Length: 345
Image 1 (spheres, rainbow, N blue to C red):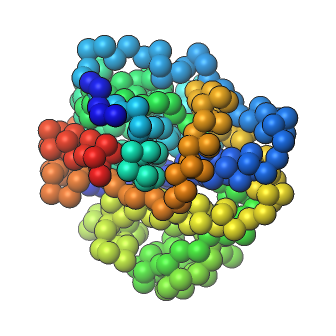
Image 2: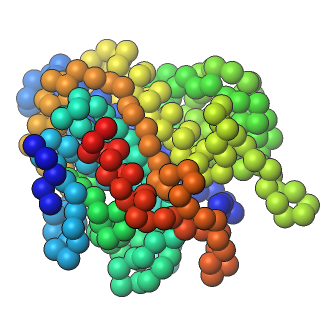
């Protein structure tokens, strides 16, 4: 079936808390729900915070031409940059620290994950030009969705949001995640406060298992300590990506590492993990749809995650706008590249 219709100097932004949402929808639930009785499945899913009032289906997008396909499911994944207590405090600004599109492409039998750079300078409906992550601060998940719709023309089938509170516990619960660090990544993590607990600043170059605090620090890296002249040395992934491109690549690599680890767990261990994860999830995806997605995923029989990021290399300019370092994308090219990745490849 076809379609129907650089850099930020902010401190302490924690991007990693979105990762285990993938495990919830595309892996944790698969293992736990397939291995337990229906009543236990309902009990587990009852721990999730269902957001009927804020459902994306209620956003009026009639003025936009959106790409969609009945054989392609797109879920907007959001990591909020405050924990539960902070989110409820008056005057605390909330921004979407991490924004991804998780795609279940039934047509091509693929799972896909697209990072949306938070520093992209886009038009936010009703607010003018600003960084993409400001949309969440101005109007929550619905305004973020409308902003993505206006700028990139993609229709979502739901969203899942996760806060920081559970991330470290989840990584530790699954026994850590195996990742490979470059020299600049290891040196940076051992000599900065990206890893909150000093006793865990003992990483090495190469493949190793990271605990929750270490994995969290790994996913936060954007650049090294500021030099006396105000510049920031680069910290690079194995394929040479730095700044926000490196950070979002680390996020996607961590998603894959979590996904891989969960596949090796017993049903009992997955149930325990689910009890940790689910209370920290907010979503507008109904139980019936979660069951349907699980069934479809099992039938697809794949666990490989194909990765992408917007804006694409060479199709943006780095500019300072209103005192902020921004990535100004070539919207026409990036819009088409995103649609191609999600629907055609």
